[in-house]
Image (tube, rainbow, N blue to C red; front, top):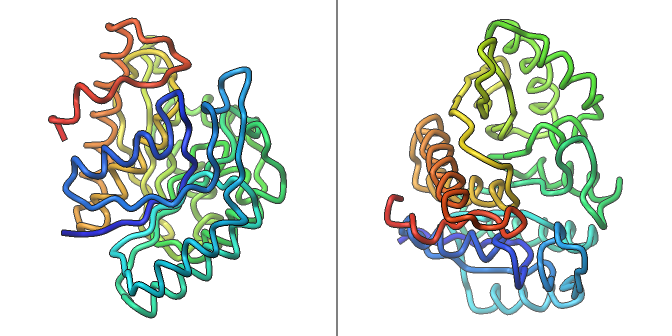
Length: 287
């Protein structure tokens, strides 16, 4: 069975990060090995959040893994509790590449959405994610994160995309953004969850896949309900697990998008408060 190290925060309340990714990856028949970057009382969409930084403990954690001879098929990286964790994680990646040259690194650069940085995030976090992207085989930024990684103007980018009525025009805009991203990573890129509305007022979510510079593919699904926290973690867990199992990326993105759409619809039907994320547990059997 494939084994993946999942480096992300652990939030006590609110479905996000490790609390989503561990059961999802396990349901996909991949052994999930957690590495907490921080321990939070809840995810940061809640008003009051207590946070315990894990940075000072991470080196000893990885040292023990290395001394035990552990090796992994994949490394999935999400939220960093402290930008100083970047160097420690990079050393771990390089050590794992010595043990298994085929190890695949997946980066979900969690630091922003809807045109603004998350709480506790700064320019140093962006710089850390740019450095990690250089070692990644797959990165999964949302549109805000993608723009920040290459110092692009998010508002201008979103306005230009909203004005495009044809996919061919959108592809030209995305091609410029993806080309810039391909300069900071040698890996595959998926820009996730881009919201769009057609001429009939129907809403969609667009995932944009590029496996090499000049390659732009759209995976589009109908938007099914409210925007909810944790859907990015859900996407990267599904796509990351499929990626290390060598599943076709376009198929993996479609499976992830369809599952997230079903989970959002189910959560709305069950009247789950938006801040609590998606009630995915009932649907794991579909994976």
